[in-house]
Image 1 (cartoon, helix red, strand yellow):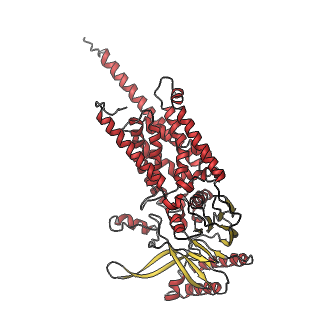
Image 2 (image 1 turned 120 degrees about the vertical axis):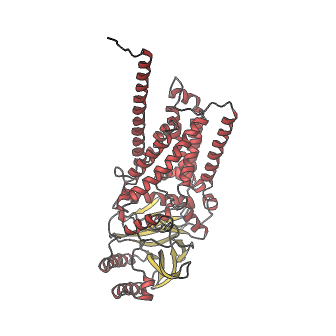
Image 3 (image 1 turned 180 degrees about the horizontal axis):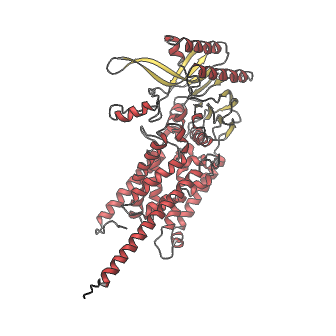
Length: 551
C-alpha cells in the first residue's frame, strides 16, 4: 500500500496564505468599524438626537477615522472604504431626510458615497506621495472636497465641518475673511495630524511622529490662538446701529396638507399671530416660505377656483387694512412661452413684498433643491423624472434676479429656505445693497429639531461672512435673530405657534473681504491640493520606478 505525503513547504505556504486572508478580512472589517465610529462622531459634532446644539469640540477629531483608514488602505480598497464612509456618515447625520421625501434618505447618502469613493483615493495618494507631510495635503484636499460638493445641480452644504463651530464665536470671526472654509481648515487640521501620528510607520510609534512634527503642532496652535484673539477683538460695534423691528411669525402647521380647509386653517393662524404682533408696532411683518399656499397673483387674475379665490380675496383685504408692509413666501404662477412657442403655466417659489395689499416686489428662488424642487434632466433620465413626479414632487422654475426689497427705510433680501446654506447667495444680495438678510424657511416637514438646528448653523455663518444681521421667519423653527457677529440674539421655541418680536440691528458699513472676493480661500486650497499632487506625481515619475505599494 502506498502513502502519498504532501510536501511540507507547500502545506506551509497554503497555511500562510490562509492566515494572510484571515488577517486581511479581519482588518477589512475592523476598518469598517472604525469608519462607522467616525460617522457617529461626525454626526454628534452637529445638532443631533443626542444634543440639540451639537457637541462642537468633537469636530476637531471627527475625521480622524476617515484620514486614518484612507491613509493605510490599499489602492484596491481605498475607494470601497470611502464609499462606505460617505454613505454611513450622511445616513446618520441626515437621518431626518426620511420624512422629507421617500427618495431623499437614499439619494443623499448615495451622492456622498460617490464623493468619498473619489475622495479617499486622493487622500491615500497624498499619504503615498508625501510620507512626511501628506497630512497637510490631505487637509487641502478636504477643503477642496467641501467646496466642490456645494457646486452645481447637486450642491449641498449640510455637514461642512466649519458649521459645527457656530457657538464658538471667537473662531467664527475669521469667516469675514475666508468664509466658512477658513473655519473648516482650522477644525479639520487636528484630525489629519492625529491620523498621521497613528499611522506612523516608525518602530517607536506615534511618539516619533509627534517628536518630528512638534513644530507643526506649535505652528497650528499659534495660528489657532491668533485667530481666537482676532475673534475677540474684531466683532463690529453695534452700539449706534439702527434697530429694525420685524414681527417674525411662526404659525407651526403641516405644510404638506392641501385643500381649501387646510388653507383656511393656515390663514387663520397667520392672521391671528400677525394681529397680536401688530400691537407691538413692528416695521414689517414676516411670514415663512410658502406660508400662504394658493398663488395670490395667479388666482386674482384667473379665478379658476371660486373657493380658493375667496380665500385669496380675504387675505388681500386683510393686507390692505394694515399700515405696515408684509413679506412672505407664495407660489408665483405665471403663463410663459416655452422654447417651442407653446404657452404653459410655470410656478416660482417666491417671496413677495406687500404694502397695503399691493404687490410691491417679488423675488423668485434662484437656487432650487435638487430632485425635490428642480430636475433638469427630464429628457436625459425620463424614467427617474417620472419616478419623482409619481412621488408627488412639485417642480419649480428657477428665478434669475437677485432682488433687494425696501421697507421702513431698510434694504433687505430674502434667500428662501435652502438658499441661505450657500454663502455666494447672501454675498450676492449684500453686494446688491442688502442691509439685512431675511431668510424665510419651512423646515417643519422634518419633524426634527436637529434638522432645524443644522440649518440655523449655516445662517450664523452667513451673518459673520458679510457682517450683516440675519433674521429667520420659519414655519416651525428655528425662528431667530442673529447679529452681524454671529451671536444668536433671539430664538423662538421650535414647533410652537407664536411670533418673535425681532429686534434686528441694521449694520451696513464696509464690506468684508469675503463679501468682496467670495470663496477665494477654498479655491486657493483646491489649487494648492491639485498642484501638490501633480508635483508629487512628477517627482515620483522622475525617480527610478518603484511602483505603487500594493498593500
